[in-house]
Image 1 (cartoon, rainbow, N blue to C red):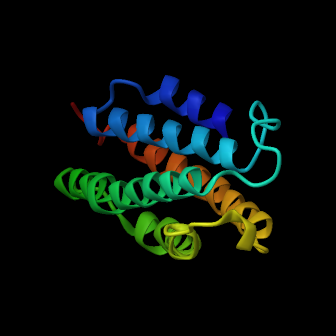
Image 2 (cartoon, one colour):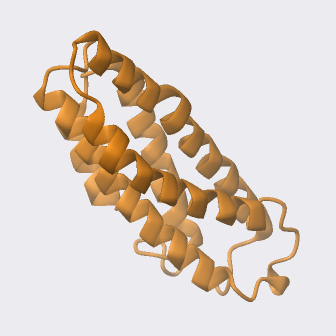
Length: 158
């Protein structure tokens, strides 16, 4: 996931300031995800589960990222597409419903763990963080498709 985001940042850097900021937020989210999921290069970061404050901080970044995509970037991309008389049907019919599914997974994770105080009482954390990782991977692919679709049509402008 981190490599995918790095490639996206390199490919689309400078297309639009909002996109650049959003890709930076995505990078922060992915680094935090790898940390709390104990994935390389953070696989020896925690002895067991991450501390509760780390989980809560991740949940905050997660919901901020999800919100930025839905309420800033996606809306901006759709406005740009409409302004250039380009069809948004592919986004509306194919990509957005799948992104919505990943949003539900992310929000479920957030609702479960955003106020956690004790990591000793998290029997499903490993399963839930794994499910979230799968949803994030799918989301990254879909978001990259959306950005690529619009970049190919020269819709995203400075």
